[in-house]
Amino acid sequence: MRLIRSSIAGHLLRMLLLVALWSGVVWSAQAFAQEVTTVYLVRHAEKDGPGEDAGLTEPGKARARALAHVLADVKLSAIFVSSVQRTSLTAQPTREMTDPKLELLQRDTTKTAEEIQSTFKGKNVLVVGHSDSVGKIAEKLGADGIGTLPADAFDRLFVIHIDGEQVVLERLRYGAP
Image 1 (cartoon, rainbow, N blue to C red):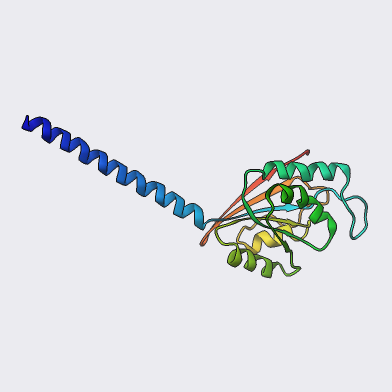
Image 2: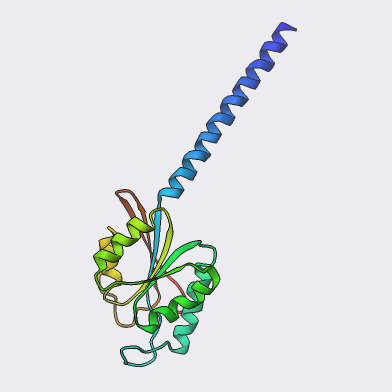
């Protein structure tokens, strides 16, 4: 009888230890996930004409909807767009699905990167920029190697994960090639 009680007590103790360890792992994973800032960085979709404030072509509108589909399950805290309508039109379907705060993308990419890292630390942010600003913003966030995008490159989606000093860059594509 004493042997059975000792065995049961041993099993209970091991079970409690496993539960405690599992709880610690889950808590650590949650704490890690809350500290990582994730920036989804894209160039605006295909523009309709050469004008400075051109809208989107039909393929551009389809790409904007594709971006919303890709980010449908992401809880965005903010969307950064420039003052020209093609960036806000690219972001519009995503904004309608997630309803985040809309921020104006500053010409000074350093200020934009600083705002993302301070105001939106631990959050998810979408930045819709231009062929010459996407690489600069990524670089200011610590992700090198993007540079200026080619004139016909509208399908690039860069996902930047920032965890303190560690920065991970993912290069993806979305919508039609």
